[in-house]
Image 1 (tube, rainbow, N blue to C red):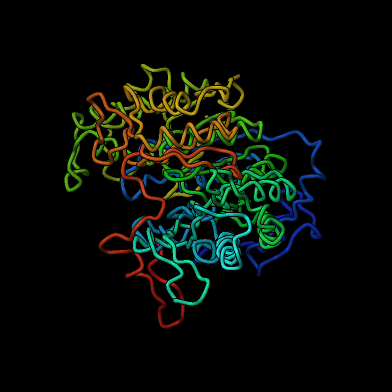
Image 2: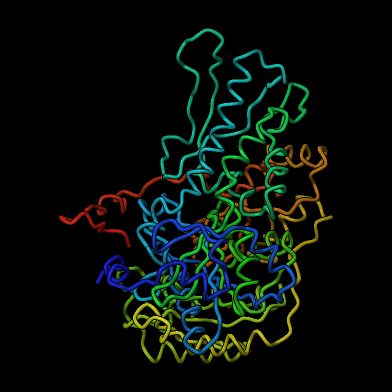
Length: 553
């Protein structure tokens, strides 16, 4: 049975019932139909003195192209905690239309561990990403309109890009203003995918509406001939953009198929952005639940690193436990086993690929100082011999393993993990960042590359060197770094899966995100506007004779 059929066959509670489970009052809820709603941010103020729940971060090894079920694991764990009598709340990201219609498909979990209504969440949901897209492109329109009417701010170089929430490589570089009308100045422009927009990052890192407006005003959209930054506030655009985002800033409430509350809000990618849901949603979940399950995108080298070094630092929070998700098929894939043979037993390939898991676990446990458990998303073709090999190897490192079957069994397939998480969150831990903010931009990038990725060094392009010098001269050298890198490898080469030989990270560009308050380093061949695969998922998505959506997975 397809995920969409499983989700459609489930009997969901009215969203008011879900809200009541976690103490949200009727007047604090704005329903969007029967099964989804916006939560008024005033709940945070009402509960400000309530003790925070335990925070559990779900991360993973470097994934294969179709992912390893990290969201399914997070949902299964929340349902598993509910099964053993704990009050759990999920805090997840909103799916982007890019992957939904691209290669990866939807991002609402799978099998019997899903959030619902899955079609709504995967498509337009409550319109948050559309609001972010509109705000981003209103700013672009105001820039070009200002230039058209005389350019009194003295734009010499525009750095702000337009965006759209789809994978469209044709838009990476475009020429605009080609109508030939008087006073229109043609220029080179480009598009990012909406989830890589600085507006999305600001949306997820803002602590309230005033902080949102402040950050939007600080966005640098271009420079004068003297290299003086021009901001959104200089354009008087900050007020209008904040208005567009005002309602979107309220987190969204949905539920799992087993009626566990789920707050789904914000959706930056982790390979080209910081990969975490909103601070507002996470803090709200921590007031509403005794255990909060959240995730950070892709592998721990990307999502978890940014969750810890950017989000936790900004929000003054830390996870009480970390789940590192792996699949045996992915470990064999990282051990050099061909995809067509991946279902066959191979301890040799598993042993070669184990170092990928071990490096992530070592980073989380020994570099960041956190409590870690490994969760194996179990497949029917995993053998007992392979499972016992992994269990023994992890025991040697003092790490527990849990086999999870939540895709097939829902929360009942994750009760072992839930019970182990309850115990793990009681252990003391300290969060140690990969770098301190007073280091130079170069030193911070090198710290992540060498400590977290295991690189022997970093090579910076001449352009990147100049950009770092400019950013530090402007007074932004104390910001955290957000490294844009392939998700498939610790290196910046997506084909270097095993990373057995010494490797170097290649930084080609440094971008200041003054509103988001971090500095982006673009490495390898990473693009901020993805393209569709040869056979996109969109080709299989359709309506059946009853106008039900089919093909979303």
